[in-house]
Image 1: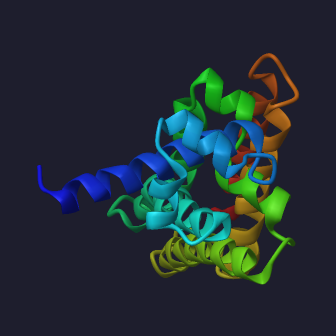
Image 2: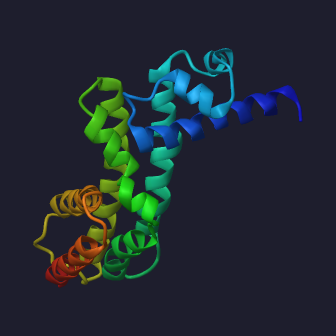
Length: 200
């Protein structure tokens, strides 16, 4: 392994461990020292790759959070299946795929939004990019549903997209308060009724 590859692996190790620590303990309370201790790396290694914690935070948002949301909630919306079928399955499947650890800690992106969404403009912009990409994909599938006669023409695709995102992120946060999945099951029941309402 050459030096460039080793350097990239070191950078990825810092990002991966930081993501885990930010997710479990919060961004503001996790120090560079804590991260370096968890990775068994020196501060020199950290500052070789990142100017400061802010730059690391942006890397975690861009390389971990955005990737997670894109792969699980954005890319499937561009699939070939009927739009109503996509809408019915994507949120349900994602919720059912979470393990206990993820249910107890909520949505990493939403945790970041709640903790530092109003902290600095640079974080706000990076986090908003994730939401806007998700919203655009939902608008796309909703508009396709209208074109194909599956979804009511009168609904506002942007409004529905914002509602679907907000409800999903909200229940992810609420689940942290409970020791069972009843609230997720209730959300899924409500979502099913809402999607029925959207049908043409």
